[in-house]
Length: 271
Image (cartoon, rainbow, N blue to C red; front, side, top):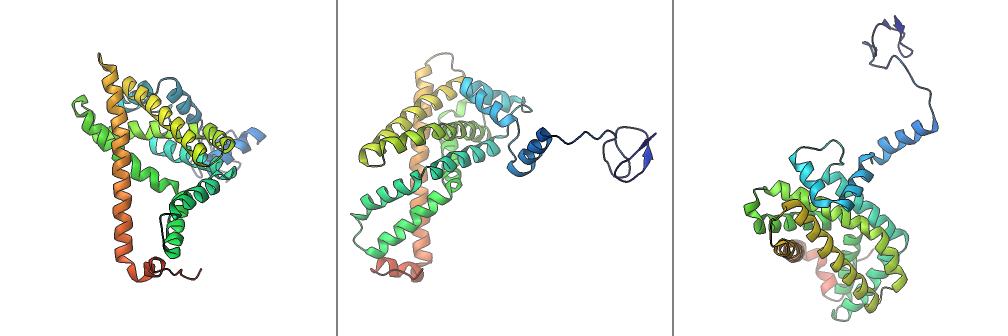
């Protein structure tokens, strides 16, 4: 017989039938406290690092395994994508890169915007996008997934599976930013620095995502064609996202014109 240390119920077995506590209660250690903090507050399980390492080694094969049913070792795609994006933008913010890029972009775009009010509206809109990166991600991934489904519709994978493919790949690319962001800080956020960062990102995306698509779809021949369709999926997905943001912004201005009108008439709202 075992006496429960929580409710004093006497029972036989591994768990108390009254309150559910384990029969054997381990001593509290520093490791146990850290694991509790990680699991309850941070919610990053041990599979996160393993998932990222597998995405580095064999992205297409790992994602295909997940879709085909081997899912226990891996962090789920949406969770992985959200945390990868959050970590990327945390580093982005800690080194002050977000403010530098926002100031540089606002200054360049502001030259083409005659109204001071319109400049203020544009700056606030850009700041909102920087503060909520998940919005961009969830506008981008569905578009890329739709394009990849269209380009690879004969492969037999449905739209949801294409979404998982691109969510994992974009999550891995976001984690690459943890290394690339400090390099951008080093080269500067002027025209040359932004061009260098954009060029590196484009090459990285094309190379890594194309590699992931080839490993996922496993073409027997013309691997270059698979790579090209992967690049086209990204480009078309980005274009669709820009169109979607433009339409949403136009609808916002039309629906809330009385409130945003002062911005475009050369005035600014208080606060």
